Image (cartoon, rainbow, N blue to C red; front, side, top):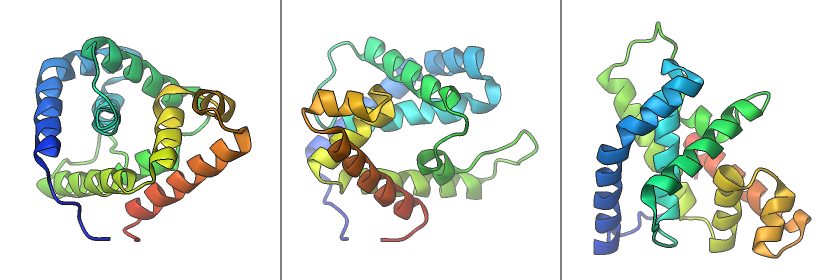
Length: 175
């Protein structure tokens, strides 16, 4: 798949996200450090901004701080509300233990993995992306996603499954 050309809307959205990260990133990090520990805080903040990156493409956000912390609560709930973390996004970036050294190579690898995930999400059909994002960041069950989208639970499962396959393939470096 050929890369999507960068538009002025994309550049504006990126600038807006950078400004939000500067303004709200430290508060989000403290929020996660208190609830999940220092080791997981940066990963969780990154997940919030990944959600914001994909979400703001659909529609603007009126109350940025409120929305960010709602997404943060959902991310936290998903991370620790499941017996094991979902492999799709966590596996893409790898988990660092306290003994792992953070090198420039690891940082580059993480950025590349994030770019692959974002590209995979942006390449999804609109309904598939919507179902995935609702399930991943807002609605905990397939039934809730189905109700919100006005579709059957089976259809929601299929859409989310297709998105997970695409994201997983992207994290593995497959087309």
